[in-house]
Image (tube, rainbow, N blue to C red; front, side):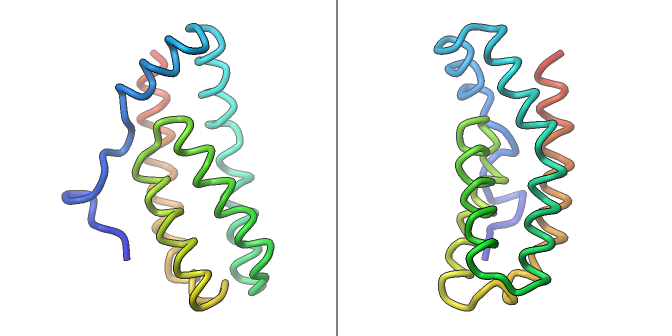
Amino acid sequence: MMATAEHGPDLIAREQLLELTDQLGPASCREFISNFINMWESRYERLRRAVTGADDAATMDVVLSIKISSEMAGAQRLAELARCAQQRLAHSGAAALVSMLALFAACGRETIASLLAALD
C-alpha cells in the first residue's frame, strides 16, 4: 500500500513544475496544469465508476491516465497512489480498489489545491 503523507512523496514536485515551465514556456505550462486541474473530477468519476462496476479494463485505463498525467504535472503523491492502484489491480482486480477511492478523492483535492496555489 501507499506510504502515508508523512513518509511518502511530496504532494507536488515544485522543481518538476519549474522544469516543465522551462520546457514549455510559462503560458503553455500554465495551460497544461490548468487542463490537468480541470480534468481531475472527470478522471476521478471515471475511476469511481470503473472500480464500482468491477471493470478491470476501464479501471486500468483510468489508473494509467491518472498516473501518467500526474507524473507530467508534478503531482508526485497522486502518481504514487496510481502506481499502487495499478499493482493492486494487476494482482486482485478492480474490486480490490474500492478501499482506495477515498484516498484518491482526498489526494486529488489536496493536489488540485496545491497546484492552484502554485499557479498564483
